[in-house]
Length: 394
Ligand SMILES: Nc1ncnc2c1ncn2[C@@H]1O[C@H](COP(=O)(O)OP(=O)(O)OP(=O)(O)O)[C@@H](O)[C@H]1O
Ligand SMILES: CC(=O)N[C@H]1[C@@H]2OC[C@@H](O2)[C@@H](O)[C@@H]1O[C@H](C)C(=O)O
Image 1: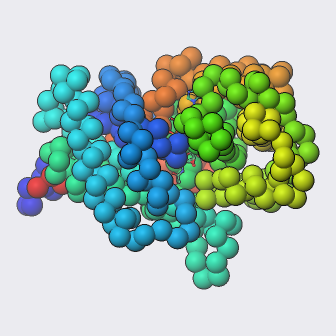
Image 2: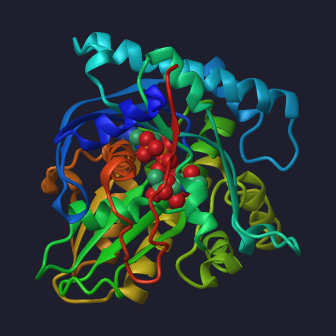
Image 3: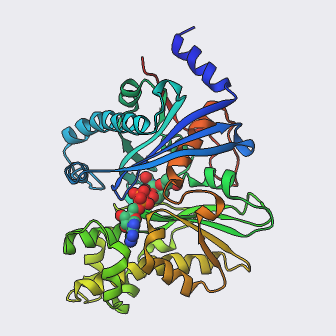
């Protein structure tokens, strides 16, 4: 037998596996690296987060990626170069983290790498006749595998699309396995660049589970901060709290047809970007509002779209909301949610034993474990598939 397949077979059969999950999100803040220990799979998964780190990206790297990020037209040469570069670079960052944790790469069974999304194109967004849902993550996994010497699983979103989904949110599969509790109405809310949630009903009826993107999380706040304040984000909401919400602009943004799309649905900065804001300012004639008011309005927009969504779909007694992602540290948004959803309890996912910053990287480690030894899981109408492609070091 091909030695790679033999090795894969051996890893898949191990009772305990050491896996690394990698996530580089739409905020482009850095690479999240989660080292996890797994045994079992599916509903019998037992997992422990052993180490977690976010290695921040240098500004120069962010600028390179931004050149090809969420734009309709970019240099194809740049995309090609970055695909190889990011694979290799993420491999270097993994080695750096392992060294810091005193872990020998030979002891790690697999890496599960999300890659860097550079374009997300669900049908409802691109609307091109003859084309379906599509998404593109770069950071070639063969480069990661060769650099680290570790079996690497990647490109998780394609199978989801091939089986009828939009390629996201994949959080569904992790949230159901790690976050459900019979008898409790739960929402796991992730506020990253884009906000998404998974509703986990008290009766564990999988037909009622819903996982969908909601709209912008931090993406508009970050973009406005970069453009008008030369800062990567509005730390502790200092700017938003110094401004006043412009209700006219807010109402205009809330009328975007995305908010009426059928569920589940996904989106990205391809739609929610500063052009979207400029268009809304044009139609609502609010072009001249000051920049702190703009930040307050964009922060309220995130709060309002999330709270409206929850009130419309899950106005159930005893609802517990567990927040993760960088937005969990945005006081403006969190306070907005607390005021708008007085009947729900809002905590962060650390109360479930899940580090809010590590949650998405853990998700990919978990999907990697499933790819190795799981069975497709049927949750409602969502694609029941095992996701990920295998890359061998040699
Ligand atoms: N102290 C803070 N105050 C306000 N905002 C914060 C704070 N800390 C983090 N954030 C927000 O969190 C963002 C990073 O979030 P996160 O790491 O979840 O993004 P991501 O992984 O790229 O997202 P996605 O889930 O869309 O892929 C920052 O860009 C910022 O907007
Ligand atoms: C295409 C893509 O990269 N989508 C991300 C993004 O970040 C948040 C939201 O938009 C979510 O749909 C998704 O990531 C998470 C990990 C998911 O698939 O669940």
